Each structure stands twice: as structure tokens, then as C-alpha cells.
Image (cartoon, rainbow, N blue to C red; front, side, top):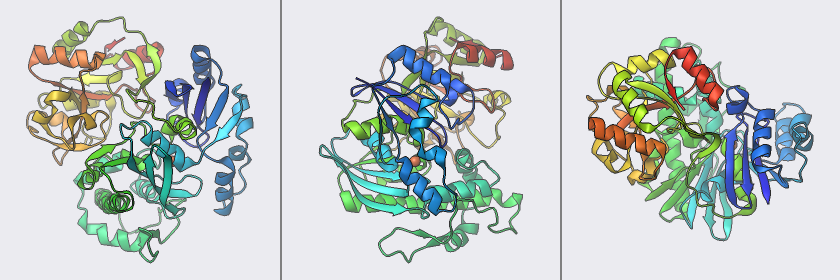
Length: 490
Ligand SMILES: [Fe+2]
């Protein structure tokens, strides 16, 4: 039976298609609509899913609309008819199947646990806000998911991190990763105690923290005497404070649930600087490659089905049937150092992992500027390396087994930063993607590149025109090629 999981009407909408418990397709709406972080479904995404897999017999929505509406009303945001009437919202896209709803944090937890390789695990969900919950912990096993701890709005680490992102003159709910990158350039000690004192309250009994103020509308008024010159210090202290609470959270879930396995979900699980802390308390860590709300398109269905799906890949989106051979890509890279690749199914999740990637030779001091000329992003942000999994430990001091590093979720110290300045951050770490012997095209490309050069890695960044979502289909790939005069292999 075809079931669709949908997460939309908030930010970064997504749709997943299941046949019973088999995941057939998943994509962000933005890839089809061309609007970055599109909060709404779009006709072309719905048509693609319907024409390839059929309209659903059931739809599962990723949160409880009535509870979210109640919280918004209680928070003084008025009564939001649109977020309460999901049936009507879906019918405008021609989706009329019976509708089921799951709790926001349970969708996150299910997306994590049922895609994990674990039969039992501690699960922690940290995000800005669900209906009411902002931080939950779960005991997960074959009997299902049992919540063992929760914190509620407005006590939210995610909301606070987004508010600080905005305070650093960045876009909240979108550019948290830029704040994370800025952290390495500031002094965390200058504002650390002040941030703790001004924002956090420890009088909440067994609660890990409470917030001194409601950050739903940000904190642009905080510390008005700090200027743009202090931004990197704010970022550094914000990240350090986040890591302090992240460690407390991981410690708490270990105490409550125990075991060797932890699953981390929610938008905060994209904090690849903090994530390695989890290995201090757990032997095995799983973060679903799309841990934010868009991942809950899959999570909503898994919360309903309560069964593992045998996760293999996040290449689940739009398919571009490859016509150009891998040999041609290697030849081009040897000559021109850089090219785009848009082959196979688009990645479901925020990272380009080789199917919609701008790839480059990572060696030497000049390539960072060359790629930056295309990406036009802040100079302080490094690019990520993609590397043959079995050789990754020769180049990076990886956390956990190298197979835990397939989705760029952990930073690792680079062992030869002087050779690869383009993929090394100021703190000499890299956000590594390892590729196993899975026969994928990116694997074949890395193998051939290694044979030709002796170098087992490439620089990998997402294939997108600045300000736009990642390339999805052939027409986007052509547009990228024309815009930047960079060859895109398809
Ligand atoms: Fe969430």
C-alpha cells in the first residue's frame, strides 16, 4: 500500500513515499520549486511522486496540528487557521487520502531509530520546537519508543541557537551552520559566562536548564554594546555553551537509558562540531542524514509503522539517468581541477554526497579560491572532503568507526592539513564524508581518481547557484553550467 509522509507548512517541506514499509522516494520541496527552504509542498513535487509511485492510500503528517495551533495561540501568536486545517492544505495539491498525524518529536525519534542499525538505543531529539516539546529522550527497542524525559517550550536549546544566529546577523532557521563555522575564529571565553547568566536558569529541579527569556522573537536586543567586530566572539561562545548543554543532554540520556547506542535527531543534530561529544558516552552513534523537520516526512510514516526499514542510502530523490562515464569525469578533473556532477538520485537531506556535487582536486593552496569564486561564500568557511572509506583514517582522526562518517555529521582532525588547506578549517578539522565499497558512482569516481593521482579524496560541495537550492533535474544542471561556465556531468 502506498503511503505518503509529509512535513510541510513550517519550513523546508518534504515528501516521502513508502510502499508498506519500503521507502521508495523522498525529497525536499525546494528542489522542485526552486525556492530555498520552501515551507510548502509544490505541484511539481506532488506530480513527480504521484506519476512515479501513485497517489497514496494514506497520508501521515509529521506533527499534531491542533496541538501546535494551541501552543501558537498560548504563545500569543493568534489562532492560525492554516496550520490547524491540514486536510484543506493538502487538498489544494490534490492529496485527498485519509490523514493520520504523529507527534512532532516522535516523528523525529522514529526517523532516527527505525533507520538506525540498532535493535535498541537511547534516542535524543533536540530542536527549536515541536508542538510543545523542545527536547525529548526515548528508550527505543523492539517494543517501540518510550519517552523518558522532556522539556517544553520556551525552554529550547534550538530556539536559543537560532536566536543567537540572528544576533550574529545571520538568517535564523537557515544559517546556523555559518555561525558554527564562525566559532573557530572567535574567543569563546570572552562572552561564555555572560551568555550562561543572561539566558539560562538552573532552578528547574531535574530539568537540564530553563530559559530566562522566551526567544521566539529572537534576542536582537541582547548586549547592544557589542558591535559587528564582536560577532566571531559571540559565535565562539554560543557554540561553546551549546556544547556544554549538549554534553549534559547526552550524559542524561545515558543515565536514563544506558546501553552502547545513541541516536541523535532534531535540527540540532546538524551541529557536526558538537556531535563527536556523543562518543564520550556511547560506543555507537547514529544520526539520520536528514535529522531536521524535512526528515520527518520519513519519520512520520515510521512513527506509524514502528518498524526498521534497513536504511541504505539517502539517494532517494529525483533521478537523472547518467549518460556520461566516470572516466570522463576523472579526465576532466585532472585537466580542469573542478567540475559538477548531477547523476543518479538526488540526496534527501541538506548535504550533497556525490550525486549533486561540485567536485574538485583538494590538493594545494589555490583550489579553495577557485571553488569560492563559484560558491561566493564567506572565505572563513572550508569545504568538505569525500574519501575512500578504508583510507579515511590515514588522513583524518575519525570519531567512531569510519563507517559512522558517511554523511558529514562529525568533524575530525586532519592529519595532513598542510597538504589540503581547502578542506581544513581554522581549527585544522574537516567535515569528512567516507564512501564504502558500495558500487556507487561516487565510489567508482574516487577509486579511479585514486588510481590516477594517488590521492583518495576529492573536495565536495553542493551543486547550487548561490542563493538557490541544490540542482535537482537536467534543466537545473544546464542552468548551473551556463551560469558559471563549469562543466556539469550528467
Ligand atoms: Fe523539529
